[in-house]
Length: 170
Picture 1 (cartoon, rainbow, N blue to C red):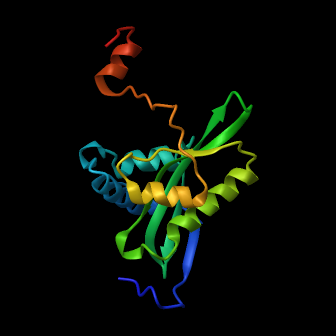
Picture 2 (cartoon, rainbow, N blue to C red):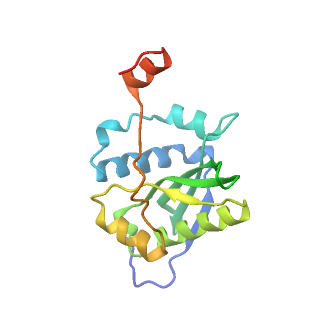
């Protein structure tokens, strides 16, 4: 447990390395549990190592540490807006362990990602949030984020994805 009143806690944000894969997987599983989606969290260390630190990384991760302890993370990647003619930064996951909440780590991670987006000339910084997650929605509103109510996320996975890839409709 972190003493939130201790002014000398050292907070560091840093890019993840391949040595962080066990921590990243733990964060993903903790987030999935919080979101009531643990049954969908099937990634393992080998998959993450290959996809995050292999020859062609699919995403990047920033680790938040408090006094040297992994406390939270943000996993993100670039997408592209044809309308803007620019890439964007898409936040896939943001998670801070409960013991470290209230220290401003989520805000620091979001500021860091916004700075990366600006430095990389991204036209957008976007993410999705579960509609029942009122604390996260309130946090994002405080940062100035606006909902895109006119858009609905669509997804193909599993048998439906394989079927379409083979030319079959659902």
